[in-house]
Length: 207
Length: 207
Image (tube, rainbow over all chains, first blue to last red):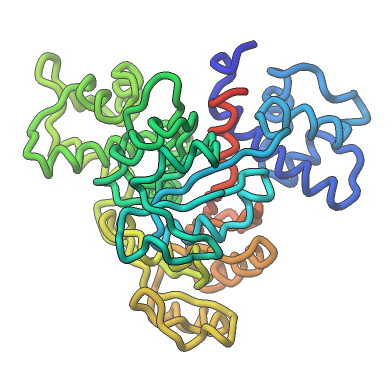
């Protein structure tokens, strides 16, 4: 089955199952049922079984899933069985928060360098990393070899930054600026819009 | 139709359409077709028509949607036709990024106060706001009256903070800590897991 046939919400939940399985491994849990994963993630066991069925038969009736094996399988499916290198553009508050966010490194995504176009920031250090000149991105990435770029700039700069990241050879862009990006077909862009998250929450909270 | 019958992905897209309609209004665009919304959001016009059909008949064949009217309708559906007050817990890098994120205020979500339990931070100012003692949250929120809470603490503290937010009377929690929260049925919690976003991106980028 090609990636495109698996519904996007399933993929989003796989990431959640991975988190749960990593916690199980840390706690020494060797097998877990779909109900057990459900209790830890808030997702129904029926949905969990359906999601996992896209990728093969993992569980055994009455025993459940072997935590280590399922973790390895899902990691391989997601491409998370090897480390990835990321370049970050934007060294403002959000960029610094991303640099300090521990989850990326734990998942194997290392932010190797941070770029900005503000002369007042270039050459300074933030969260243990030196801020590099945006103008040097393509050249610098020949050395860094990052597959992923993160955009933490104002919306008005996002498309220009995306173009520069594509030019520098990244294949995936995680965009935190509230702007819709146009990228070539060979590159995947994903928007993280924090405002949207609270708006959706507002709907579910109700009047 | 009650909120629960509308698929969650539709609600997430409504927030995106709202963003698009706000941009149209700023640009002086008075009417827009579903294809026009599609070109600005990257969502197919069929999907757009289907999403909007949950809430009534908005468009007119050959003319499209009246931007102002649709904006008002969708805002009301989402509960965004009035301002909302938010308290933030956690004054680290992520908390500061959230305080400085302009989108919340533009959407009517005002972060009225920031709380932390670190004695080294309490009483200091960050991004123009004074950091208050977490121990005073319930008392302070009698005055503030926030309906929403944001959690920007380490995962290990998230449940405890969620309990305190519920105690303080919030009805919606936006959780940025990578931890599954348990909250009473009267409260809605929504997780924003930044690691998950890049993991999902990784899947779609492929090997």
